[in-house]
Image 1 (cartoon, rainbow over the protein chains, first blue to last red):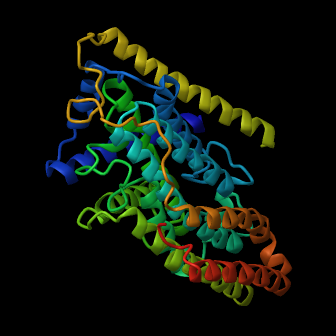
Image 2: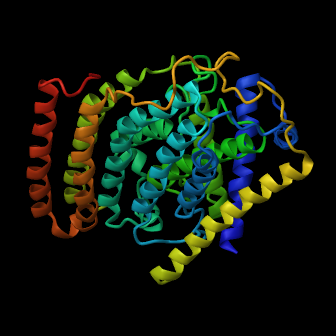
Length: 303
Length: 120
């Protein structure tokens, strides 16, 4: 039952993202357009390139979708409304999301196209930039909650949300989440405008539909993780507590998704070298000081 | 719930997702197959085949970062169990990890001073 509900929530969220993305890109708000576009994908031809690595080419989008769905399995929407409440939930999220890199490199290598290949390798550089900034802020969150279970992490924020408790960690995690979901300004592997679609360049028809769906699931999961770790998950923000728990999760996740999709739209794309330099020189230093700060606060203040 | 049934659910979820994708592909296949036409299978390089082969070795220009990344990633493997017992252990845990992190941070600073933190 939980599995069904959460998968339904995932598809509703993916639909919402499609509507929102159409709105931000084409400046046209239409509820029916995503349905027509999705249907059109199945009518289009699914072309294979001349020389291809069929296993990698086919596995790329599927692996991306599997990684997204597995990561969604540890994100709670309400008390008890979670697919698997693993004791190592926060770690499992990292493990599942590591496959995003593998999937994108496979998708880049598979079709033997120059643009796709460059997009895939770029994402490897991007991974080295964002990966530590995903795991280090999560450590600080786990220090406060004394657990890696995502439900315990949400419950630990009863008195004060982590976004106020460890704002540095939140900013680092949010920017790294943009990098993981390759959203602008960190959309190096697809890079509309300079790579002709990058890893998406050779995908057409049904395969492209799966790739796009997987990307939406990844964005949703990153928004869900941000809400779980920093915005108190299903906890109501004090006022107007009449809504049910799952509604709060839904509202928060949708707001964070909307911010993720629109935040970087007007910022120029960051070059890989610059992204690596900033995240290792500034990001890692801030993340280590965040761990230290949270460590001191957690020992002094009992909340 | 015990750990093993949970992992069984995750495995079922993986298989279910793969099955879902195969269903979608089957649906697309039923709607119609792609026609074999000359030139359609050329990769997106302005309509011509690329001059240079694509499957070759590339210079990983960020290898300095990549090596540091390995060290930091291993360190995170220690950080996760530490973070769970942190409040229980108190000041001892802070000092223990503080020394460890200080050494690691010195390593980062040394690498930085030697020019590891730039695209080679």
